[in-house]
Image: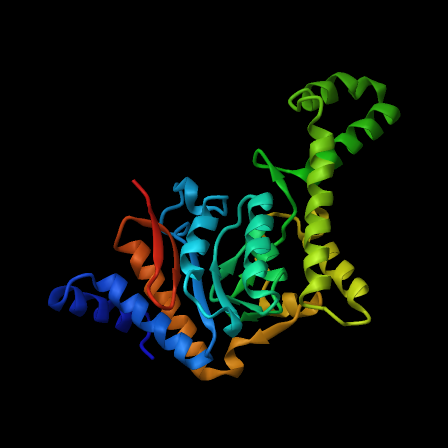
Length: 298
């Protein structure tokens, strides 16, 4: 399989000889990946690395239209390999997308992460029967963010304010100024968002990845505790590697254990990265047959 540079050279040659180079090369390798696995393949790719200001790069409700288009006409008995590259996004949208995908494929869904599936992307991965990661792959914490603020952090700040007010009454005016930036119901919203993330991922893990496992509840609790813990992970953007994913108990298949699959997945990934770098595409949801919805940046 070609490397990063060779994929780009192939795109350039195809563009000069046939036109539509990035699309043609990308679809070629998606099709080859499907022929190798014998499973349906849907790539869910965000161009957030190349176009960081593109707002629709995050997971949102409109993405379901892309999945509906990609699934139409597929033999759903073959299961699904879902290639994820996303910074995350709306938890409720992720929950709805998973509900739809499971309605189509049951729990016969495998997540493949060539590079990054962060936040709500990690949540979607947890809804799959297993996760395929390489040494270069990362998942991330899914501790909820409200208005760009970590829900766990807000709760910690409130708790600290109460503690400091009790131990040092003179600090009350300072903490009043800090806490006043939050609207009256914000603390409750943060608590509910954390509870929702816990509940959703626990249900997915028990009914999917650990279905039939007598230790499912214990394993699930350990995973959720590790991934929905702002105090432990320190930052929402924390990159967790394959060793971390295995260490917290997720079912992970090492991409390097299958060299053919590894080459195909990475070649597909290179093709998507070149697409975002050389076009106005901001998000792509595409199956191995070439059915695609592309959202463009300005």
